Length: 113
Image (tube, rainbow, N blue to C red; front, top):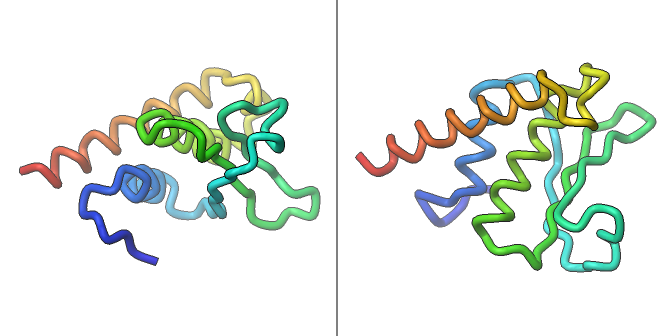
C-alpha cells in the first residue's frame, strides 16, 4: 500500500527503517482503543512467542508528530530484538533509534530539495 502523500512521515520513517534494516519485518497498526494502552500510553511492540512477524501498535489519540516519533521508537525495538536491553532502551536501542531518525531526516531533505 502506498501513501497518497509524498511527504507522509509514517511512510518516511518506514522507509528509513527498511533502508537501514532491510531484513527486519513488522506489521504496524493504528489502535483507536485507548483502553488497550493501559500500560503503554503511546505504543508498543509485540514479539509473538511463536516467532511470527512482530507487531507495532501506535495510539491514534496522539498528534501526528508524536505518533511518528513513537513509530520510530517502536521500530528501534524491532531493530534491536537480539539485544537483551531492547526493552529497556540500552545503548544498542539508542543507536538504532538515532540511526532511524538520521535516515528519516535525510529522506525528508531529499523530498524537499
